[in-house]
Length: 244
Image (cartoon, rainbow, N blue to C red):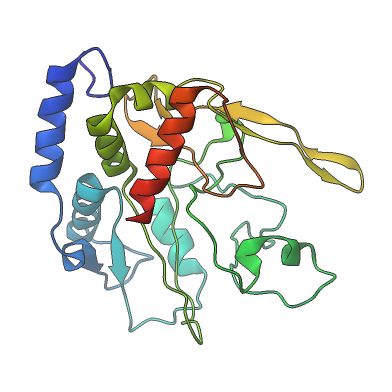
């Protein structure tokens, strides 16, 4: 079966690209789906969520009449959409969900990681440091409380990033599909290695279902890029796209 992500099949890519851009939302309101109760979706609500995700690889759900801090809302919503395996990182809460909020306790392990501080967090995909057999393919980000100041998120459909980069130079895509394009250095703790060094591609295609997924970070202290001219140029160009 032809794949739009096959660099040798420009026809399949052009057809997919055209369909993607024609259907792409022109306004953020097109991605907002009101939900009566995220814990018990109706058939129409499930369909609307799926349609939005199909267009932009994301959807915004809205249920302002329910208590936002109720953790069953994102958990049960995610389960109904097929997100049933929690990543369960060691900083997560006991229920496996991660409460992303600033931690001012200097002795806390969370305080060592940017998501749990007041610092801005740079472009990245969730779990970019995971081994390939534990890659993150979907996530739910639930707002339990507005930030006192700031708190805005910038989000980008990874397929749009792929299109922009491939249109500039297909060789950039080939470079970022190399299995050693990006390397995450080992993370050390008081017991030596907490996470082993991990190499992998930025863009890859799922071998069973054929969808495109992406692993990336714009952070400079936790990433080593392959040292060849094309990969370095691809990384620079991708950073410029994200900065637009």
